[in-house]
Length: 253
Length: 337
Image 1 (tube, rainbow over the protein chains, first blue to last red):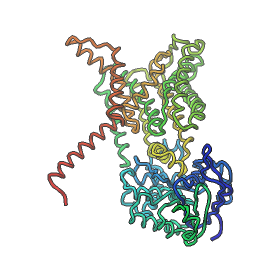
Image 2 (cartoon, each protein chain N blue to C red):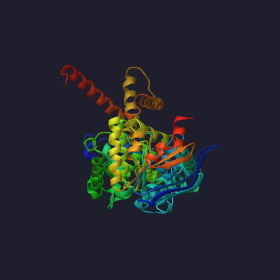
Image 3 (tube, each protein chain N blue to C red):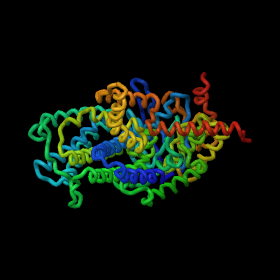
Image 4 (cartoon, each protein chain N blue to C red):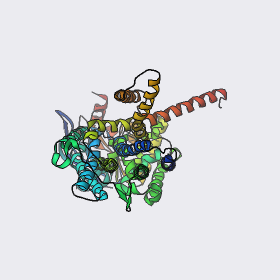
């Protein structure tokens, strides 16, 4: 504990005249589960988008494992060991469940265009390895029974699990989960909490944006609260629950 | 599941190689040779449209580059046909890089615009650069290609030659779709955001596939030049590029088999229509080949309205609907649980 993996220094993002994130100084420690909470429009997803290269910050620095990652493209960020999921589930719905996870092995395999053309898949040992690895991650999230059905036909809860399996298949050091429990029922939310605990046990640092307070308080080591793009509080779940600023932000004056 | 395409591929190749047993007429063999040229270009275009999600409205220009490279280098410079074909492919790769790198870096359909402009440039050059292309008069006396010293000088020989080359091209395309790269491409099609988030380099793949599709088109063009032994700018106008897009769209964007089916169907359609015209003439209705365009347009309209997945996708959707209806009826008769 205590060794930083992701650091923000004076991070700021403007959209036109609107400031979505402002003066954010924050550190995520390795091997922790950190939750970012705050009302809608507080800038939580914008932070994820900046970390993963989907949006460039207006100013400030993002440092991952002592490396400045401000100007990196999405696929480079992924290759550094950061992977994310999306608030509105982004699965490849026309592909099977296992194929979705196989895409996650993209960075961990290397057959190029020409070799892919010449050799059919049965003659490529790498292909078999990709499939086995994908199956391992499906088993990890408990979806191996659905491996060969189309991903689009899974219920939402399982689609979220699949998205996480696909992200884990890249073997990230840092996993960003954007509202993993949104749209899930109570039972599925509990399963999601258990899954996040298992991911942490693998030695993956998890940062999540989430509205479900029971989930957040149950699994987080550290909680950060944003309001109007600014960090208004951070601390352990217990500290946050008693913080008067947080209560004001959530409930109004 | 995995092997389905390879079984289909084997059946298809055997069928095409056996077909001349039933067709001895040189004219029809010639039609089928042209069909192979179109299918070749269609498979490349299908990789681009159906898998990389980009449209090229100038693929006919890459066919023209293959054809003109073959024509110019063999007649003016006396190169061997194989070498000239290789040069045509290299030229297509180079041009695809020049067009693709800037336009595929941007999101949106900039490639369609760039290729459209490129196609009209190629057409103008082929008409106007008389010293090189001989303008509208065209290049004559293009030599026939030889395979291991064996001249492919009859329709039947050329038929086997082009369909085998097409089979190799299709085989490569199927392998590609089933590979790590193909999965990356399908992922891009499903969600660009998610694909890039797991590390797929979207821009690079789009450029690679565009280049590959240009190679298919250039090979098709060279084979065309060696078959007809004469090229002029006529067949390579913008409408040819549009026809190629139509073939892929009619067959079904997201399936290589759809592209093959579309290529075959629209290549044979003029023949079918002229046969139909003969029949109609018997009952006193005059059908002119000029009406072909209307029929093409009608087909495209019908497909886009009622089968947006293309003929191939449409038929399988129809099949599964029928299957479900039967299952439902069976379920009603024998309620489960």
